[in-house]
Image (cartoon, rainbow, N blue to C red; front, side, top):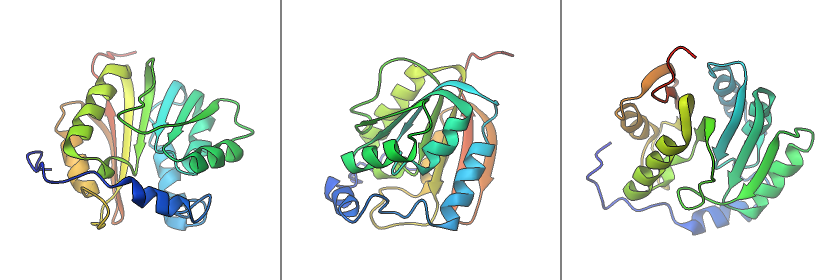
Length: 200
């Protein structure tokens, strides 16, 4: 990704308002085989059997949230639109580890630290400044040896600021240890490990 391309502006809020006005799962995350397969591969790519505390911004309708919660003691999900928060709460009503709140990154990044951060279909909406601010927050809140899981759609979409390939090339350039990578026709998934974990 050419990070000097300052003319790329963030996807406007009206785009999300328009989608969320159509229903509780406007991207049909719960109904499409593409999504079901991608979500299962995302969970299966987690290097550890369990995580203590996870953060998943841009959780949408909570479909991936529900699956991740099987492996997490305390899972904080966040969505910019209240309809998404409500949908996630309903879907995860039998997952006591899940809490959902309204907000968007980087502005509403939560306090505390995490050993798992999941950025799914999210970063390509951000402009350059917001991407860099988000990475600084990831660096500051992911515990040593913790895992960052990023997964993004690869084909170019008019409403996306970047492609998934551009986002992941930039992420891999940050110098963290690389784990599992899945390069599918439709999406790219990478697992990165925060420095300082040693053998623990």
